[in-house]
Image 1: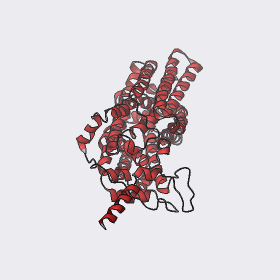
Image 2: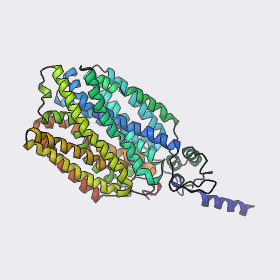
Image 3: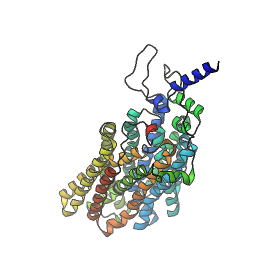
Image 4: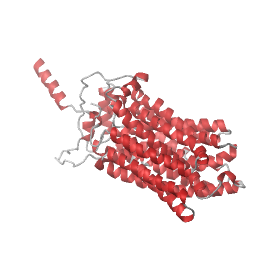
Length: 495
């Protein structure tokens, strides 16, 4: 009897698989039909769509600041340094949220933090629309940033740990692409609100348009499964098996039964400082540098150009938003700049579409290197506009910004996000991706705070030439510390 039990136990272990192997498995239906690929289940699509919505809100809120900033400045009577803090507040919040809350998903779970971040987002969004002074404005924007910062690692992981390896790159990047849609939506809504409500109070209504959609997304996140991979590395094998069943629920049912392998070693359950110290161990140091340094260099350009495109266009094309004669002049300048920003921002969407198509074929590293070089070329073209006047100057500005926006989303803006959530083992993936996002946001904060000052002190062309150098440096760092994850199962990365 003992021998029979041992034989059954051995057979069970032999048939057991990892979570990712079950997710990657091509279904074979009872009639013998074998599918050529792994179709997404309803639960997998629900998880993907709710994560994509979070990226949309990030682009919407952060990039809308560029349109709202002239109105905010006039209403509260603030100067260049205070403008920089308004622009940087949400980015500082993203840094804090990514580093502080993002890592908590390794301890409390992906789903729990996925919900908490949206609750925070909704609360601070409401506060932003009713704030009555400069201090409450900065606090509200900071709070929004904290929520969005948590979303950086959490949204990536809740998608990547729940979908087939073969389509991980394109689906994570497709969700990330909603950031570009949000950026375009933010400038577009800003333009529409200004057109129908040409008053200083218009900026409040710009942000208010996101409240109802954000509440709907928050409710939806209660009805998804926890990441089976996270449950498994936490030693909760039975719960992981049940979550995998819910995740892979199909009609007809496949797989019929789920039996996960038991870990050969005790699951890592470190938290707090010890969790982050692991990022700098010999095992993980290369991944930490590779995921964070290029992200920092990329955000110097992407956020600086993205947030201040309306301002740069207004200055470069001859408008004088700081010396307007009346509120109506200010609003007219803002409308014209928003239209120009919407045109250049549309190339972000085209760029992300190419990234979605190429990431799983061409490879993440190659796209990131080529993208950095392309960004440098675009910024160089825009910088050359300072040597010309009239239509030539306008053409160079738009051509340079459009090329930059296209190449950044084909390469570094998309690939740094994708790679940061892939190169770390599951037990510390939240901490690793959160740390990388936080380092990236240091670059974004520097540009958001310093851009209004530098535009005045050194001029647009010189500032753009500086960003050419940082983009080329990003290509070099990427190549030196490269880790290719294309086609590699998440549960195999870090071993």
